[in-house]
Length: 209
Ligand code: GAR
Image (cartoon, rainbow, N blue to C red; front, top):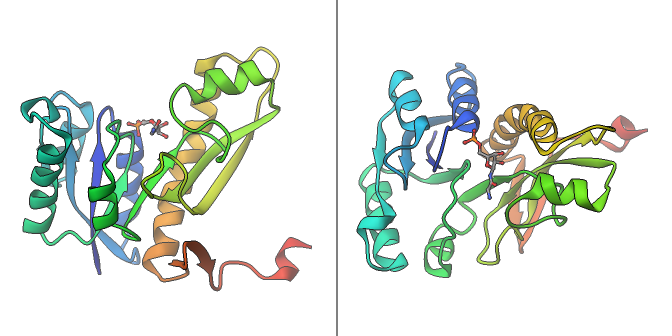
């Protein structure tokens, strides 16, 4: 069984959905650690309440990105972590860290990538006038929000939407999408091969007709 660490920076609602999904007996992985770069992240307490070790490594205590990431990497290695889920983790990771965890680190992003990489995705979706929006789970590569896509969910943009109403609609989808995507990966049904995600036993041509 894979030993997963979830990296957060804030409230951790995606983290909670992963923890809940992983508590099912048939889930193919264990959430072994929650790690935050911000000591005040609300998600830390929620993880502890769920009985999961929750650690903060304050990036402000380190003078360089590299030294922060070395501390992160050491904490992960010490606990035998073999897979990382970024869930609202708002620090850009250096190529060193990303390469070290290549094929073993995924992220959830609140847009239909490759649209709206980076921040303020809901505001930008509204400004562009797109009629569909959503979220994406992808493997992490050095270029920000540019990695191979594992899963996406779509929501409509409706008249009168604000950043908040749209964010809420997308977040509800994130909470089901992320556990599904993690399950696919841990069961070997979605795997990286030559820089692309290859799927097995996920759907057949008949399903989509
Ligand atoms: C989520 O919407 C997630 O997709 C987004 O931050 C939110 C975290 O919420 N992530 C990013 O923007 C990554 N660049 P949560 O802490 O409640 O899971």
